[in-house]
Length: 127
Image (tube, rainbow, N blue to C red; front, top):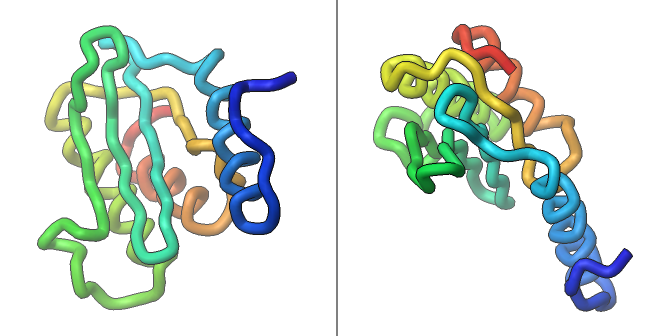
């Protein structure tokens, strides 16, 4: 199945494969006002989480390792991902969101992605 992503070599191949996975996931997952989509974007340095209502096209809540409360914090990247998960859950609940659909962005559900999701669940956000 071709999704319009060029196949390349090396690192570019990994990025293209992740893009294909994300496109495949996004065909089935969509955020609604009752249950918006929790999108996780991971880079080598940081992690970002957004709660998005796809019907309106609005971001309901967001958190990142670049936020003032998390930036320069203690711990490794997984600990920072936990802080981001708790913060985005807190902000989403303040905006009136109780349940979300989890979108891991084509990344494997392990490590920092799983740490963020577990912290958001512990903070009271339902998946």
